[in-house]
Every structure is written in structure tokens, then in C-alpha cells.
Image 1 (cartoon, helix red, strand yellow):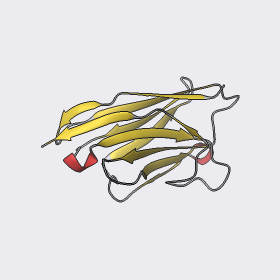
Image 2 (cartoon, rainbow, N blue to C red):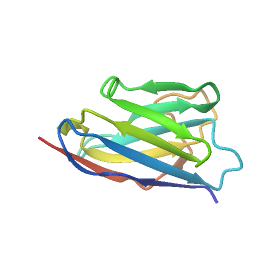
Image 3 (cartoon, rainbow, N blue to C red):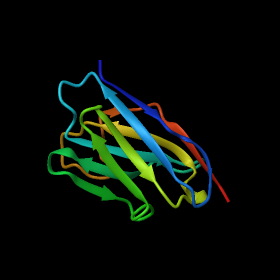
Length: 123
């Protein structure tokens, strides 16, 4: 059974950093495409980062470009979202996602999802 388990959320002051982890299990091979999304209160869920594993291609939304980094540890079957220079507007529930059969991109209709982890950034 495929499973994605997130960890690393929490509360931080503006300008601080957090690293989210997404541990993947149940896959025969790590999916070729994985990503991170977030959903703030009253807003639609938005994709913030994606990773095309086979070619190590990463993509970011404009709102997080230069501040967030998506990466993968293939030994641990875990991918990460390193978040730096956090802003109050980054406050949201963050979700990891994996497995998309089409072209890997931000906001793709991934098949598998984590449960979400809260990130709160105070000013």
C-alpha cells in the first residue's frame, strides 16, 4: 500500500526556516514526479514545487522561487521542502504528493497525497 507521511511543520517567525519531509513507502520504485502543495485558509490549494526525479528538474511557483527548495533522498525514499526566508503569507497546510503519469509540473494532478502539515509564520 502506497503511503506518504509528512513531518516538519510548525510555527516560526518571519524570516525563519523550516524543512518539511515526506516519507514515501509502498512504491516499487520512487515515482518519477513528486511535488509540494499548500492551502491557506479560505484559499484554493496551490502547487509550490515539483521535482522530475529522472532528470533532476525542479520547478517552483513565483511566490516561493528563490526561497524554497525541493529535494530527494533516494536512499531514505524521502523528499523534502526546504523553506527559507519565510513570510506570514506562507502560512498554510502543506501537502506532499507523488506519482503523475503526464508531464511533471507544478500543480499536476498527482495520484498520491500526504495528510498535510501545518506551517504558521508569525510577523
